[in-house]
Image (cartoon, rainbow, N blue to C red):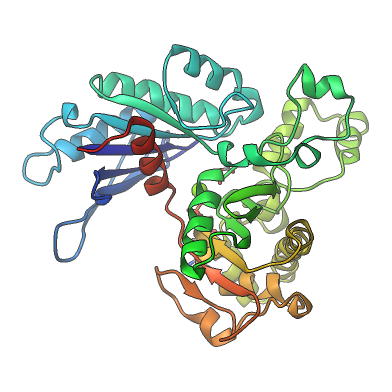
Length: 402
Ligand SMILES: Nc1ncnc2c1ncn2[C@@H]1O[C@H](COP(=O)(O)OP(=O)(O)O)[C@@H](O)[C@H]1O
Ligand SMILES: CC(=O)OP(=O)(O)O
Ligand SMILES: [Mg+2]
């Protein structure tokens, strides 16, 4: 049995094909710069033995449909393909960012589910429209497959009400669903599971720190999420690549009331022009790191601000959890950027949180400890694997055995 996982983003598609139940990755890939004349497809096939075979092509892919058609071509190509035809894929797992309050669990996609995902476009404007498009294109390209939605919000449905409610008139929650939902749940759940297994402590108190383009943190006790830094949409909390994170809403009133911004302009400002991009001109942390190395004071300040926000949430979540067993860094920045990890944990020795510089400098794709040997609180780097977690959830839902 093959399970195909699709993570359809605003300008990219990530995908991975697994043989089940072996959990064996067969191939994985990334389509970037969709809609531009120089879209790039990177496709990697993992053979039974030997080095993975990687191919990369630059071509014009106007939209998600064109991108996914190209992917199907790679999957079925004579000689290098991994399946005979699209009918060989029977299950497709989709990452869907916002599931609202309706979806506390992984769900088979039917017409009513699609309508709900569409109804949530306004709450996750960067993500849900792209996720929806990915589902529609896969329905067309893989008509024999069952399509499953795995929601970023689902893992956070265990938040206690005092953590997920805002102090707004109660009707806005009861009638309009305005509350904290939280995001990146698939990643937080996966790395929390990996960390608890590594620590051999199923009831571990963990703070998971997901630092990708979007960034969020979660307080997890015994596998249940107690709090998280993103809220109603994926905009609050940490500083991100292009998103502001926490902000006094008064700023929005000033922008609209005094500076003449429209609502759409405020949304674009906070979602697409802020964060590290707004502070430094660079949304990619590698570019920020290079600017810091070149002595750029704005980049140095931005890095300090980014790390300080993480540190504040670490302190808050240590309080939420009543103690800590481990801090877990993950995703593109969390797995690769030693300076961010060092700065975020600096000065937290009083909580037992400490980073060992030699261990922190090690580059690896494996789970690793970066705290000193014998530290009271482990600081871990745990590579996330949202695609594997999505495939597992599909298999559990459909009880795929063969
Ligand atoms: N070697 C690295 N050092 C620092 N940051 C990195 C490195 N590699 C990737 N990143 C950061 O990871 C980010 C992407 O993370 P990722 O988890 O792939 O995000 P997403 O899934 O949201 O696209 C990039 O914007 C980049 O800033
Ligand atoms: C929800 C979210 O922020 O996702 P991403 O990090 O993929 O943008
Ligand atoms: Mg991501």
